Structures are given as C-alpha cells and as structure tokens.
Image (cartoon, rainbow, N blue to C red; front, side, top):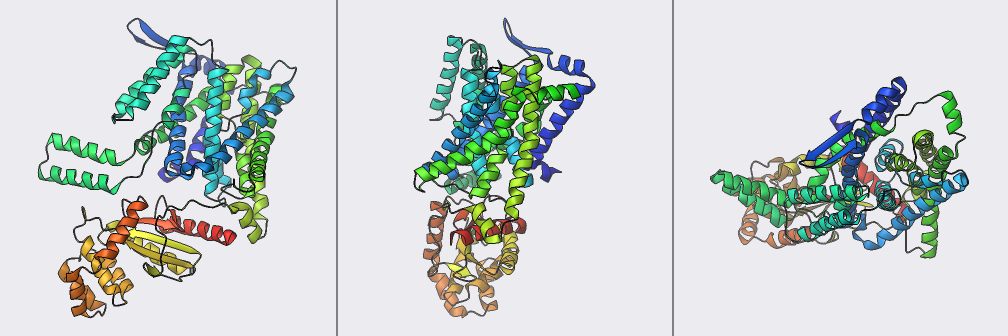
Length: 603
C-alpha cells in the first residue's frame, strides 16, 4: 500500500475517491453536505480576524498544491529539461495555445447565452489527474512525456492563476496588495543570505493574508513561492563538511554540536528537495482530495443530466477540454516545429505528444476553483458536471490513442513514441574506450556508467543487479568509474588503486569483482591476498601500490564526477543521462530498455 501511495496513480486514486464520496454525500444528504461546507470558521488575533466558510478555507489550502507545482517546475528549470533554456519555448507555445483554443471553443458555444464569463473554467489542465492517468494508460510511453505534461501544466497554472487574480477576483484594494508584493520582494532578497525556512513561511503567510484582504485570490502566492525556491544537487564539498561535523559530534555529543550536525546535513540538500518531500504527500493525499470533497458534490437526477448536457456551459467545458486541449497543444507544436525549420523539437514523438494532449484534457482542480468564482446555482452545477465529464472522456480518448499506437508495427511505434529529439547529456566526460574500464561490447547501443566506491555497501548491493542486467541484455556496455568517498570510507582509495594496479596486468574486472564481494576485507594486507587470488604478479602489484600508479586515473574519475555533479555512490548514467531513483533490477531494466528504444529510433 505504501509503494502504491508513493506513485502518481496513488494520488489520482485518492482524488477520484474523494470526488466519488462527494457525489454520494451530496445525493444522499444534500442539506447536510451544503451546511457542512458553508460553516463559518474564524481566526482572530485581538481585533483583527478572518472569517470564511469551510469551503473557502479548503480552497485557501490549495495554495500548498500550487506551491508544490511551482517547486517541480523550478526543479526542472534548475536541474531538469529546462536547464537548456531553448527547451522552454515549445512548452510555452503549446501551453498558451492549449488554453486559447479551448477558450475560443467555449466562447463560440456559449455566445449569446449569458454564460460567457465562465470561459476560465475551460482552460487549465489538472496536473495531478493528468499524471495519474498517464501512470495508468501510458505504461509504454517514453519517460519524457511526463516532463512534457508537467511543463504544459505549469504554463497552464501560471496563466490560470493570472486569470484568477485579474478577472475573477473582487474589487482590488491597493494597500494590502502592496504589502503582498513587499513580502515577495523580501523573499527574493532573503535568498541572498537567509537560509531559515521559518522566515520564508512567515513571509508567505503575510503575503497570503495580504492578497486575501486585497481581493486577489491568494492561491497565486503558492506558485510564486514555489518558483522562487531554487534546486541544486548535493555537492561533495558540502557532504564532506557534514561528515566532519558528525565526526566531531561522535567525539563530543553536545547539544550545540547536535544542532550544527542537523544544520550541516540540511544544508547539503536544496530547499526545493526538502520542501517537496514535506509537502508533496500532504497535497496529493490530503489537500487536493479535500478540495475535491468540498467542491465536487452536486445532486444528480435524470432531468438534471438531460438539462446539463444540452446546456452550453456543460457542453462548452466538455468540448473545450476533450477537443480543444489536444488540438491546441499538438497543433501549436506542429506549427512551431515547422516555423523553426526543426530547431524546436518535441522531447517525445508525435504519437506520445497526441496522447499527452488528450491527457491534458482533464480539467478538475483549477476548473472547479474558477467555476465556483464564475457561477452560482444551477449554472455552477452544470459547470461541475462538465468538469467531471472531462475525467471520463479524456481518459477514454487517451486510452484510444495509446491503443492505436500499440497496434502499429514495432519500428513505426518506436518512431511515433520517441521521435528524433536530442536528449540532454548529463555525463560531462564521455566514455573513452582507451581510458575507461568497459565490460561488454564496445559498440553497444546502450552504455551504463557507474560512479562507485569499493567500500560503499550500496555499490556492493548494486553489483549483482548490474551483473544480471548485463546477462539479460547482450547489447549493453558497462563502465566503472572511481569515486572513493574517503571522508566516510577509509579504505576506498587504496582499494581503487589496487584495481588500477590489477588493470596494469590486464585483470581489472577480476579484482573489481573480488573487491565488491569482500568489502569487509580492504586493508593493505587483504589487497595483497586478493592480488594473489586473482593470479597477479604480486611483486609488480606491490611496486605499483607503493608508487600509487593508479592515483592519477582515479583523480581523473573524481574530477569527471565533480563536473557531472556526482556526490554519492552509486550514481548511474544511461547513455549519458543521469538515472534518478532506485537502482534495483526492475528500475535499471526499464531505464535501459527505454534508452535502447530511443537509440534504435535516432540511429
């Protein structure tokens, strides 16, 4: 159950369950449902206070959801696909078109019916649902499709929150708005030196309250703060500093040193990573489902369904999402690629992009938020029915697209899934057959590079996985590069030098395997015994060890690790792309298979 809940599918399942519960509740006891969510809840500090209905407080909690979306977008901007800034152009164009086309369709259907003001409810993709449904229907889709959908959703959310602030907010009161802008300015200035999260949390609360008082919907502040929270990989220097602090604490366990250790460890992880880990589960399994529970409940009768699906509001929202979203996204990508003469390319193939466009036709969270601002009474119920219908229709559309792709011949299917877009290469120093230690065919289409440490227990656990991976795939080459973590593994450097001394006698892999299988025996006398066990000339081995002949090669590997922002072991790169996540057989096999499919298309 825990493993399931960690996935996007788990978050989408919680959202569906909450929406279903709201429908059951609203139809079983409509008066109770309405009275519960209309209950007033007040927070007062002396003479000042905020009094809102329970539903409005829940909508305010959506600030955390948009905060997490902003964090994910910032991570992509700092460390992911968007660190090459030219890759930002296509998602921007596609995201903008993916909103304008649905809006145009909605306005065309609702022209003259007095419901034109609801156009904002027909434009924004629900990120949680789109990625959750992708996990269900898109198991054969390329990994880049998830990032592409995320980027489109972020563009959606940015523009949608701008629309909420400018179109669907009440009368703007200027002084509180200035206070909110000032709090955001302090957040920007604080990045220059303030590292305490409590300071930013306080400024965020001030900005939220100020926006609420100004008449602007305060959920805008969540996305803004998320986009301002930078991400970076842990550096080896910071990790070594944290190790030093822990050693001091081990020698003298005082409260002062304990605080220093906690601060030192926390500083190695970027604020973006820390905050995502804290808030992502809460937003996925509490905040967004609670919002669905508060806003999805509508009474459904046969007559109401008949009226709703002849209503321009319901039809406008449904057609805008199911037809307008994929048409706007795929059409804009095609026009941008044609206009740029191929300089702007999709990160996936056109078939995967079409499936992604269909998945972006799911409108829920932001759509419900805007619908509650734009409509009341019967029209609000009609809008909610249209929004709920997008879940089913977009799911079916995406499933039809993926089923059609599965029917294609394998070579064509790979082309429409992966396309010919260039992938970002994370490995700073490419593999050199004359310098690197390679196991497997030298001309293999897939190359797995591991930065490892012979004393690292995780490298020892990964070794049989790598061995099984090479046995399963005959067309994969494996490269070992040294990264001895000398601050925590005192024998790692000598063990690496022993493997290089064995390499001078043509027995690198024999020594490599022996060292990883005997990680508890890496002292100098153990290394001499290992040399004899693999059949080395022991006198030559001893001379090479005394002269540290392998130290230069090891230093080259360490420098290349620093250039690739590698701080820990084991770290894997597959065809130059860093492998994030687990290094069990299932995860590495899936990554290798995806890399091999992409290589077959781009060859």
